[in-house]
Amino acid sequence: MRKAWSISTTVRNPERLRNFLITLKEIENEEWNHKTQIEFQARLVKNRYYGFGSTQFYNNLPSHLVEHIQDINHIITLDEAVHILEERNYPEGIAIRGRTSYKPLEKIGLASIVDRKIKLTSLGKYLLEDDYDLGEMFFKSFLKWQYPNPVDRDFRDAKIYNLKPFILTLHLINEVNKICRFKDMKEVGISKTEFEIFGQTLLNYKDLETQAKTLVEFRLALKAIKPHKEKKEFIQKNIEEFLADFTNIDNNNLSDYADNTIRYFRLTRLIHIRGNGFYIDLEPRRMVEINALLETYDGSSDEFSKKDYIDYISDINLPVLPWQSEQEQKKISDAIKVEVEALEFELEMQEFLDAKSVEELREYRKKLQNIKIKKELQNLSKIDETIDALNNIRNLDLKPSIALEKYITMALNIINDAKEIRANSLVGDDNEFIFTAPANKPDIECYYESFNSICEVTMLNGRDQWHNEGQPVMRHFRDFENSSSNKSNYCLFVAPKLHRDTINTFWFSLKYEYEGTKQKIVPFTINQIIEILEVIKKLKEKGKLFSHLQFQNILDEIVALKDEDSVNNSDDWLRAIPESINKFRREVL
Image (cartoon, rainbow, N blue to C red):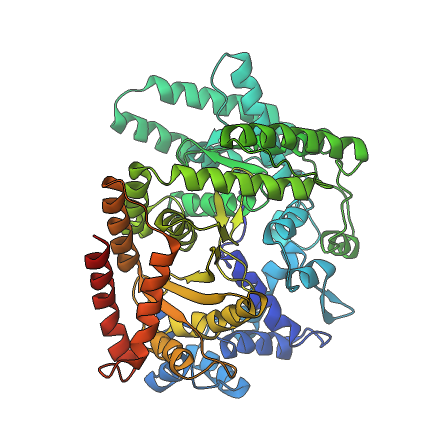
């Protein structure tokens, strides 16, 4: 029986891999055996990277242990973490849990076992650097990921499997577009439904053309069906036929596997989402690189010993990319310059950057794209769109945490005359948000004529909000203050709800100090940001402008609450913020 390939859903959040790797580093150079496998899993619990905040994990645990896990002030010892795992009473044992948590790190090439000892690879060490690029890390890993390979027992039959999944996915999209071009059909890439059925069931590069033709036939047949109910039945019939002899995937998890795979592939910046999120296509702004990949690699696997394969996938300098030559780099630069010049013309700018590298050009293009977006966001319809998105943040095509960073960035661009609003999120060449900002940077940096600020956002509501955001927010802000010491600095914190522990932490830094100095941290709920946007919208309807100085007044008003006689603690402060927003509304309107 065959198995459909997919990216493991064991770790759904790519950023979580970094936390697992940080934990593994604590036992680097130790022998990987039954004892250290248990210790690795226990350290994940100890560091609150595993189990914390999970109702499923808390099941069957005594209430006092759940309280210890949830109490962030309680330092979980290693012995206590082992005891917690023992109380979970896993039928397969704790060591297997440790091996399962380790496996994604090995498969991606972040860690390996050398002479029975745990080693972080060059790729893994890159992920732990301060200036790591999550997209670059996954791109280098996916180029080399193949089946069969010596470390994955599930896909070892070379008679069935012969593919590099990421490369072959690029080939499949390209082949479908070629067929559509020949048939005079619109080239749109492949739909998510088509990827579910035909993408992860393509197991051999030799079947590429056949699979692509079958996909297009499916598309044409589906298009010919008009009633919605019959369309659904047709899709279901094809899913059942294609998955009939696949042992590891069914209707219940088919969509989950596909969504997870697309989310990861999107990180490489070579996959473009189009058609309101319905289709995945080749990134048009990276076609020089994509064409070079397609010409160099046919999607077939290579032969390796286990050691050679692990060495290969874990080396960040391999493979040597086919567009590294001076000639190919010039092609890429020339293509970006065409787009840059078009943006400059549209924006009536004459500031073409004399860039020395492709990355500098891309960074300049991103700056121009942000200027264009800021201008577009001054339209009333864009304000309505942003308000609507923030009101429905959990129901958008984007993952909520990514969507929140995107639409709070848009909101900050709408609010006033900022010089620059810079999101540190991972974005594609189309400037669409792909993933959240890395753990070592503020989510959003805001630069104004008279002051600067950062903005940190989270979808967390419970006590884990304090655990994940409290200290990191203050640390990010202090680093930002140190680099922007010539201006007054603020930190905005935005969440669906503000947990009392988070607010108490921020109150202490506001009223007393953090690392010896007070901080101006201003917490808002998403609804309060929406209230401010609605005020801005009414101003614009009257043809009036709203400046960054007026926005600074709101922030100063909320900061100054700490000195009011009626505000004696963090609860009083939190209760007083809505009245400050009401006062702002009355004064402005």
